[in-house]
Length: 497
Image 1 (cartoon, rainbow, N blue to C red):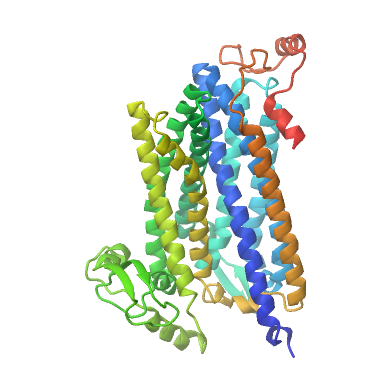
Image 2 (image 1 turned 180 degrees about the horizontal axis):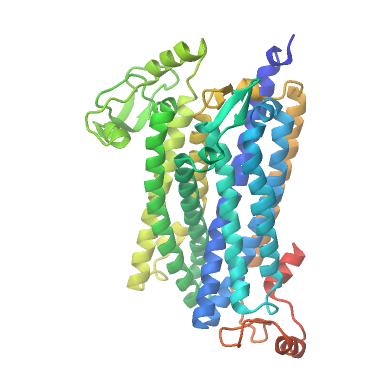
């Protein structure tokens, strides 16, 4: 019996999917907060350089501890995650290896290398590099993280909407690399992910600030950074909702089954109502759910900017898929997509509202005296991660049963000679490493951040905005020697962890 059709094949496939889903969700959440924190810390350091206000320097170093920990966890989870492509998904690797070569090379050999180099220069450059050059290193880290995200999303978008290829001997080969890299869907996905990451970083910065404001620690400093977080989060979150909307409009065109499942729309409607909240069986056409709050015509308006347009339902799309691809079930997990979609939209909208309210309170000068808001901001730290999980579940599970939309089924992409036992063992090992790493990072972060900024140190070996030209020459060496060549707090943290 062929390994792909053996009795344990479906078990191995399910375990492989669970492994990739769980590790991807954990890794992506770390990447998102890393991008967001890098931007926030870079803005803090920029404000210190422009104003000379030592409060911004203290905030830069304080939040840099969280940023560096996230980078460390991201490296560990990212390296381990790549093992799965060759281990569990050899069929997919053989099929799409030529397509994935360029994006993965850009991410691994280009963006990651640049990111590591400039992060090292920034960490160990305190007091050694000129202030502007030192700050430029951090902004370069931010640029490199964006390059990395773009490369990965290029590869993932090709799986959602393949183009710029031809099939040769049953394998995809590149015919137009620009069609792959400059796909409009890549741009929409990239903008949505980056804006979500900026919102995530803003929520984390605000949550930490709220923790200390509730305890009356460093009130002036944390009020400043809370205002910055709310402003960035409001803009990023609002634009993220817009980018996500247009991404959904494109998905209606290229992946109509995904969006029909996200609405639990089984019957084609013209015009189509938007379901806000439904209770009832969603796995098959249930007729009317026991409870369903709908807005007439709104789905047609959202999908096609028309109040009377037709939106195709799951039943019609299933018949079309059978006629095109042959017998089979082409309907993804409807309840999973329905609720994932609503978690993503609901959490994102709530966070935009939270940021707007926080900005209003800072303008009124009542943020520090609003404990109800500060507690809400602390609890809201988990919300962007739930929104991200909902978005990625919708994006990836909505494509099923395809691993490459319309070309390669997920069942045909797995490794034929890797059995269920081997996948189960690797799943346990991977999750143990992931969860252990995250737990250690969270414990370390609490240890480093729980006591607030701490007293200002007038002997810190850093350049200020008024320290002269942008160099680290003999004058700086003399200053270092006179101060005992003290290392910066950020470098100490990097050396320790």
